[in-house]
Image 1 (cartoon, helix red, strand yellow):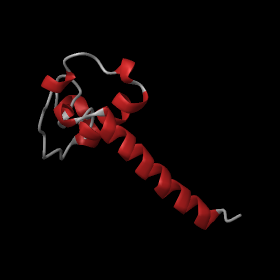
Image 2: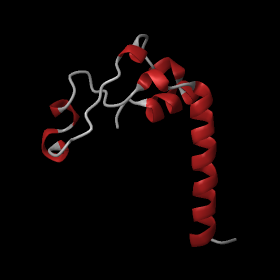
Image 3: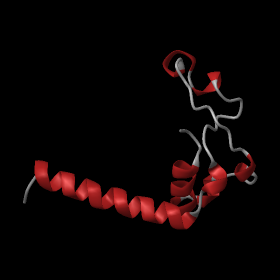
Image 4: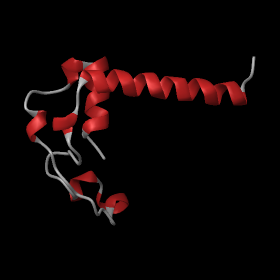
Length: 82
């Protein structure tokens, strides 16, 4: 959700200096977040993490970014053909 595997993997690939030491120990589960829009993330976690940063890796971040780039390129090709 926030600070989990997806986001941390992207950061480990693109800006590893922004990932603090010890984040792998910050896994936090909050599967039900009915008041997220009014409480924000702070209503469900003290450290801002909802997810499993322990599963993150730079290799996953590269694969995610490559996939997102291909998808964006395909969508842009539909709305702005050459």
